[in-house]
Amino acid sequence: MRELTLPAPLLLLPGLGADGRLFAPQRDALGEAVQTPGWIAPASPNEDLCRYAERWAASINETVAGFDKDRPWFLGGMSMGGMIALEMLPFLDRPPAGVFLISSCRATLALPRLIRLGSVFTGRMPAGLLQKIIRWMAVPFAVRDGADDDVARRLVEMAKASDPEHLQWAIGAVAEWTYPGPRPPLGDAPAPPVFQAHGRHDWLIPLREDDCDLVIDRGRHLINASHAKTVNRWLYDHVTRLCGIDESAEPRVEDPDDTVRRRPELAARF
Image (cartoon, rainbow, N blue to C red):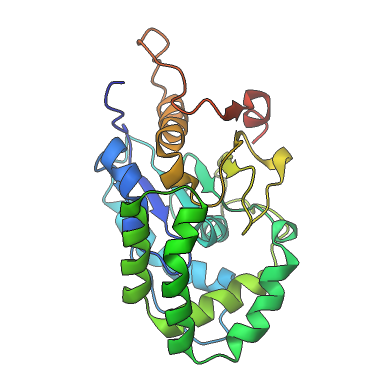
């Protein structure tokens, strides 16, 4: 397969307890156009995701202001990062041309009750102990999801480097997230299309199949790593199409993961 180099910037927001290292499989394949903004600190232990996204959008706006104004840009996120990406949309000065959700959800109803119940216990747990538990779970989590040793190592490193208080805030904020569905940007700009890739056996955020244009039949939560070639091709195809690039004459290969089932008729709806 030829190299898949994105023709426009793609900002990907990481999931809980993660940072830019989470998207190493995407940067390696898609190039420097893939960027991961650093987390900001919550304003208070009780700050909700909407207010947090509004504050984070201010720094995203500064980044986007430096992009080529003649080219579109794209926003996405994995897991919690996808939720924040959706909440950011009303606060972005220049809306993205598309939003990508990886192992995430587009409305509160998709969150399992287990996440909400778990926040009750983690809220009472010392933040340092919570960080250690997440670090201990990193390797089993990667193994369960079919990721390789490098991914497991990165998960452990990210857990060690994470801010314990930020972790505790994040779990509570996700558990209390109230969001009926994507809100349009401010002003006259049209709402960007939202695309969603999900593993059929995601045990953390269960699949809601009608929301997805890409379902990975054997995928769990870490599909950006366990099925990186497929996720990268999905991102590349949507970005190039929305950039107005016609690659219909280019030589192509079949999906590298034959467990994937594409649903183009659903993609057109979002």
